[in-house]
Amino acid sequence: MPRKSPLCTPSPDPVGAAYRERRDALRIREAYGMSERQWTIETICDALVGPAAKQQFLGEINRVPVHEIVTVFAKWQQIASDITAAVERGRELARAEAETGEIPGEWIDVTDRIQAEASAARARGVA
Image 1 (cartoon, rainbow, N blue to C red):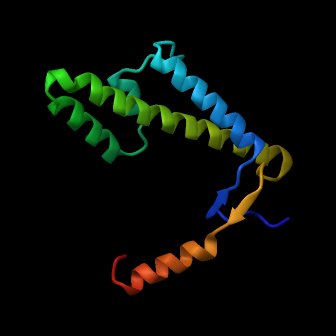
Image 2: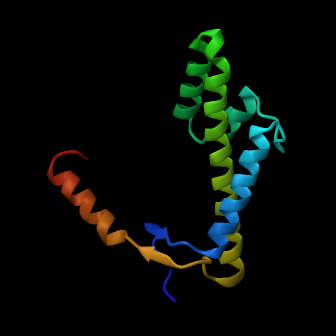
């Protein structure tokens, strides 16, 4: 079977459903203070992927009025949590691919559509 293009989007699959169930359970635990992870400014920074995101987070948390700190912190905690869950999902898929040679689930190849959209954007001078 040919290797899947990195520009594929997943269709609904049992592995994805299991991931969503775990993610939703984690969000419920976090909402009620039952998080498996203690989120701090440092752990949120660690979870953010690039320096621009870290800089934006630190800028927001440092400049927000004190009565809005919890709201800004909660927003970035959710972003960090989603990134952490996505990283774990990627690791699960990589493990499955290493073991079986295939990524689980059914995938719809959208490479041609994305390439056409990129060509159209370049023709308009956008990219």
